[in-house]
Image (cartoon, rainbow, N blue to C red; front, side, top):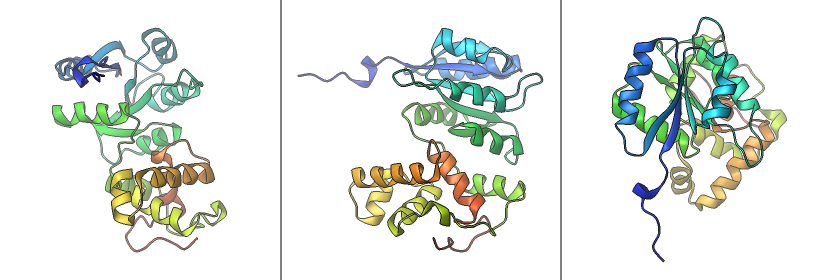
Length: 235
């Protein structure tokens, strides 16, 4: 049996939500130039995002975090709320001009899978879309640490003691927070990838979060992984 090649697969469908026409135009040029990516919809505000998603059915939404009427935080929350069995919500990648934008942390809390700076190179934009489209989170550990620190978080939290993570689950969470993939974690801990995937699923369930991005934010905000260096807190 011949398996379909990557060129035979349907391209990843993308919606652009940004109040700056030039930004949308630039992103469209970058993304439409890739054979596996296609822009299917645009909006200049978060107001119509739920209707846009329902009509165009994108796989990924590139969402400006700062917009004048309905911002990217509220719009991300609306997109995530549409997640249904058999009809999953598109994954959201928020766009920002400033690496220390506090709004980005709010968007991650709302359900965004990662963020991207508007000054990113074209190849970085395309790769970021591919990463979130395949179900991974786009994590920049140093940037997340800075966001949490600038929001006033300290290392005085409870270290996630209430989550009752096992020792192995704690190890896995620390490595997730460091930006490692499941395969990289498996190699580091001498485990199978499926075993790591199970541990990650258990961590998400115990923390009550929907994805790796939110787990990493919780790890930093709780002090389990310190935002200013050092070692993680005990369970």
